[in-house]
Figure 1 (cartoon, helix red, strand yellow):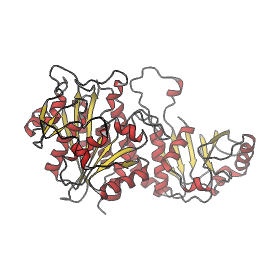
Figure 2 (figure 1 turned 120 degrees about the vertical axis):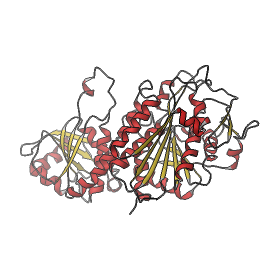
Figure 3 (figure 1 turned 45 degrees about the vertical axis):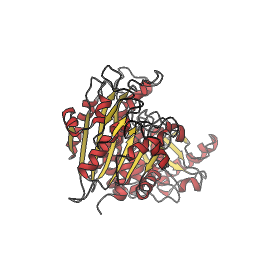
Figure 4 (figure 1 turned 120 degrees about the horizontal axis):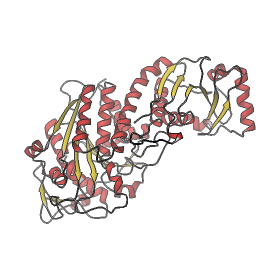
Length: 497
């Protein structure tokens, strides 16, 4: 849950209390607005304190001082931005997160100004987004908290000349932050709480925002012929669900963009059971589904002018006398048959049926699936970037650009005929794994057989959805990765103008 950072936008002014935050570069120069707020006494103090404390104004450094007489503040916090080159490429969410980290649980006025800066509504809103995400903590199951965990939320007032534009843009950034927080909460929840029916129920809460939600229960899944998804679920006492969420904010009749998420709420590996070490992390094997739900929440909250359908296949993969087995042959909704080689290659079976259903039922203009699909992608790309496989250059280019803009980066991986050949089976139309080599690519080749000619991209987010590299805007185990990426993609390319 977020611990309640509140953010307001205001014109530059001297009145107020709490902390006062200003920014300097490596030349220690203050902007005109900061000098106005600080007055001569505060401006002189910054210069003296920087010299005595050997503060050089380097990027991501900070200096905290008691506020001098004449400055209405408890503390003065000076944040370094670095060289001219550093200041020219400020990552606004990261700066917001860094700043929020220097005033934890406090009231603070932040003067968004420094020499040469041109800070408009969009930049201030992105700063606010980062601050809100930095304030996230998932502690709902802690009955006792350490002193440093009980600081509560901060209250930040962002002061800048263009505060009216910032307030307007800030409403959208708050919607995106809420979507990321929802996704993080879902990934962080334990599997005894977030089982398939409960996940579907939480997805259905999007109806409060105007999203149309349909939850398909087992009888309907059998009627549709989702044999691949049902096979994965048959070893669990908790029955599967598919949740379909429709946001109709665009022109009536326009084909939607489809977002599909893997929602394996716990993955033991099934009969091909995983080793015990690290199995607890498999509560996060639904990070793709969490990103889809979070994105729909963000789009609906900011009233995006786009038609988007989100679909998540929600199952639990458990070993049991009724589990599916290696050598089983299952029939997917498409009619294609699949030889099961490894029951731990389950996510692609779930996605195969959901991809096929969404393609047939909604005729989307493009489909993007997100899945914590393979450990192989972590070996290839680490935990800072997601693997992207696509049959469409335009769609992959748009995703790459959105990733660069938001910092949720993707790297396009190859899809060649050899990977498709690797999943051919002697006994069925295909097998569910192509072996150890090129595991992320053969998994993508498997999914490609279920999208026909629809423009499609598969994002393997196994490295970035959970336990990823900490940053100034994410100190959480569950990252909520993908919400900002997909929201930016929709904003730039799929909203009615």
